[in-house]
Image (tube, rainbow, N blue to C red; front, side):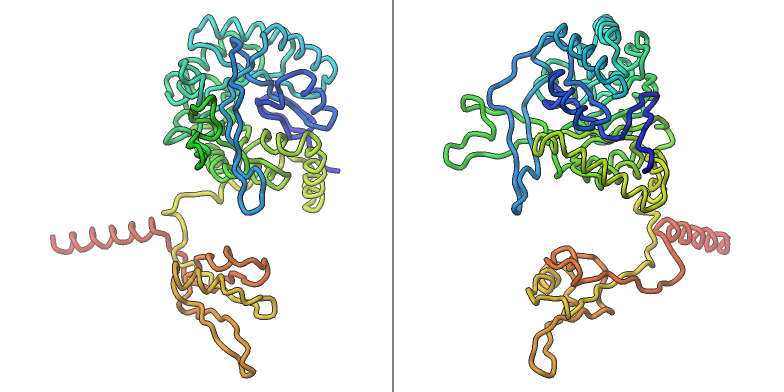
Length: 427
């Protein structure tokens, strides 16, 4: 069995699977149930001045038979007194000393407020702190959450204030509701953060009821934007993790969050630079025991590849993630259809004919049976036919031997060199 233990900025846990700060970590009862199921850590639901939550607060999108493909909430931070939460954190840590308990914090952007809550929380034995600079609704209107997280100067300043008082590692949770997440990640580094976590939820309006025109969800006929999460946001989150992991200015660990639903998703995030992952929506959909499959799946994956430790996955694919200008423009793949497997639904032909490069022909063999064939000389290897095909093995993208590799950056450099040579000749 591989070693699943991780060490994220000094915070250790028996496996990379943590619960994110959210409804599943609202109480000691829940976190203890999660630890009994096998979760390696939990980020406690954000602590601060207790608030009032709305009664109607969740919504979801189901797509093509998949329930909760995307999830939306207008829930805020804890609505329970700080003293109650601290008592339960203390009891939970005492009962599960080997599990990571991280306190998510949010207070007004005032130095004394941060110092006060940090000291109180650390006194009950948490393993680390996560600063919630990501909540996009409710708290942002009060000058907290993403209102701070969208301003690099505020991220740096508040991180610095926390580090003045903190004895445990400080993780800064970043908002995706920003043009470039590396700007705020760098600000967290400048403020002294020990790690960053990403992403928090994305601004969203889930829908409008066509019968009564109310927003979904609505509160007494009125709605507000909420935070979007779930499987649908995974590609956005994975990109932001990768962008931070490949930045030379962000050399601190990353806790990956966003649409992680199974062990495969977790491995992707770790390969792209995350030391561990945090999960919320999948747990709200399926319960705490999904971690059993996640642990088994990761164990089997590591064993099959003769990888001794989960930490050996971290960042191993980051070097493969680059800028468009570095891609080989001479690389070529073409689509090939396996007629023995093809069910002749013609989806690939329709997609190619109407929206791509018109290179799939509908033909008939000697017996009059219809079949589809790709004109490879006209195929640009866009992958669309394979994407829309309902049979996984019917269409393969096949690599064609190519010329000498050439990137757009190489081409521009070559053009520039030729231009300079021509100018020098004229001189």
